[in-house]
Image (tube, rainbow, N blue to C red; front, side, top):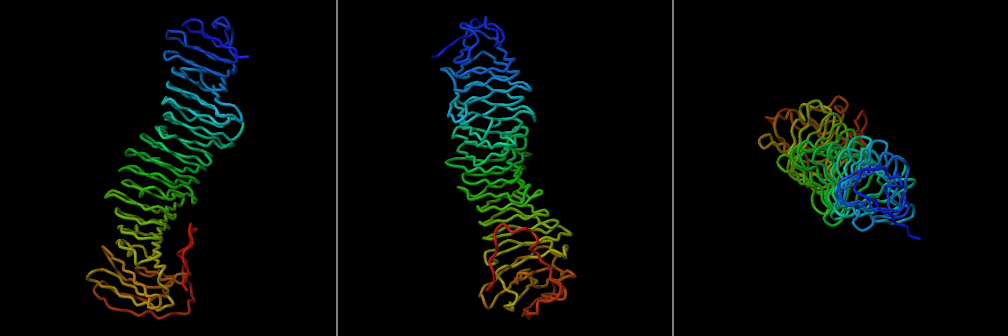
Length: 463
């Protein structure tokens, strides 16, 4: 039997004070809709099936209030404040419940999701601090979001997964620092962004649909990936913002459009593989620092830097200005140099760095030509009938050809001590140029393996 009770008059009071209700403390349907501006305080562990809150009302939760069945007409139109240590629980196990929120839910602590919960009504959920969380309760849960969720805190939980389905009108904004944690297979048809802080995806996969968009929207903002996969929709990094990888298994899959980068994409403690095309603006920068940054699709515009033992791998066409930072031991790995239209600088200041031309077999005795006037290196594989051209800018010293452990051709300047015995000099100085026909060696000696970073996709073999 349905039992409904209403807040009697527009005055402050405690939820568990039966005298403040028209029909005693509610357990089924509660309407806090009496006219006026007032606060109802929940200081004990309470539960109700359906709830409505008027626009000028504040519901202060200091302990726990579970709303298991959704909202009554009018929904959450007022303000719900969940204090430190408090919990607002929504939903029920094995249930699918909808909560109409046109007001504001302020979280200092937990918004607990049980079963499958939908938030609609274009209201706001604001997280304020490291203790503020939207978490699954008692098991894996799903939150379909049609509100604006923003602030600093955590979405997800360390034990159970919380799947986020961000609807077409849903907005999630990492103002101050927001973390998607253990999110399972989440989806986004709306907007997930950061406008004033960090937005992190940890142990989370997000697939976008329709006009779904993920973006670092303002200078100084960061999208951080840690064991995460983002795919579908669009991704954009504005000027002065960045996308950073913190784990070697981070992946950006196929998107609806080229990834638009006017900021920085970098490996920061982890490796990143991007299947999609990347379009860098004039300020767009790629940085591989001690980790691998790999691209399967076309990469155009902007600049790239390789520092430390970083590696940049292009599996498709690339037209970008690449610089080896001084002292780098890194690698520029080009799977098909016939598609490479970029430039290379700084190799002469990094004797242990190299360019790996994966489509040229060292044992095929390639023809090598360096033109010191145009600073173009041409390497032709007569067996595979493929020609790679590398345009150098800045200082070029003693270019040399050697063999990588996979049998492809390495280009260094100058050769490192570990490869010197199996190296053919291409040019002694930038004043001389001509054609050198490499002579295959036994492959013995100490040939350094430039593929020391774990591959995200296997490179083709030379037949």
